[in-house]
Length: 242
Length: 321
Image (cartoon, rainbow over the protein chains, first blue to last red):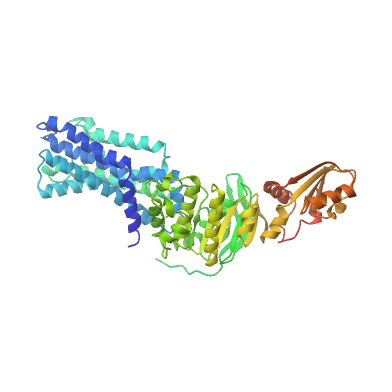
């Protein structure tokens, strides 16, 4: 199959990056394993803390994994590699599909690691719930994949880590990855407009209704539909490809 | 997906112009490279070589004029895998080893060469397991060359392929290039070095200030720009007499100062001193390429600066000074 080599090497490059290993795998896993033992029997947002924090850390690590292809794009641009690819027959479609697939595969690895850790600390869900949660997380990551590609093609390699770091940490924090900051009130209404809120609460969702309320789907869909055209525009503007 | 038909026209560029802001990088050039030909684009920095190459690759769109590669648009030619090459800037990406990088680029092309063969041919086999982003300048340049070759394109376009390579590396590079040329591939490369262009190209296209100044076999270009010059103070001598001296290609006057472009400075100097005993302040110097270019293009505002192949600058052009 044409393009499989490109996807394979794209994934290999992501797995060889310290950034991926630390931010997507090590950091959320270590935070989980350090914080959960002392809060094992706590309740957060109406569900057990190990489940709440498992979803939160899975979402946090996966946000990093799905936005990170942008960091690689910016470095490749700075090195002239994006331009060098333009004089090869590599198709725009292959290039973008490889970035998206890599983002999702790394995110899935993060989820697997955190699910394993959660299970070790007593999280029990049935098979359908595990699958539903995974599905919700993957859908909710779409805006992050798009924003990563957009930023990677627009920002300089110096500006990018700060912009991405700020964005992910802020969205994770407001979304409740490090604890529910706004249990009620107008701030809760505002943070519910962020895709990270729905990622972090995927765990609560699956033991409750099983799916996000319409509000959640709309928020994720609107962000995704706004950011995908931006990513495509940024890609086209930067590479001249259509 | 449509497959574009390839014809045997090689590169055809007609009336290309390209400006970046107020800078006119390329001002109306015509260039034809036949299939199987090796052509050097020779010129100093700012001559328009890279802009021309970018338009052949389809990386830059001409403001006016057309360019075709094997009868197709540059973008179609690149997408079909007929074209490969190296750009002037750029270094290999992170997190890939040399062999992986070459394998990756090979996967983009319909009929690539064997990766190991290409590594051997480009002198990169011994660094195949090194990180491609952590090589010296010369090694990185070789890896880029390997990546350009591995797709086995019909047209190779190389923008300053030997910059940053040491002498030994250059020799190996040109050996590899000759093998490519012998297989009937079309090659266009740019360089600052006259000797390099002369030794490795069938034809040299001399560029300066965004235009083509001369286009012909190396010997003719060499006679034009490779000469040395004599400068001296000599009031009253006729330019025609000076041009008639042995070893003198051309003579110019600026006030009392004369400049003789010479094919043989030894013969010219002894003839000059015996014919014109009043000659003072004699200076013999190798004309730098930059100077030669400037001289060749000095009259461009008044004259069509493109000389026919092999023809020396016309006397009228000289006397207009």
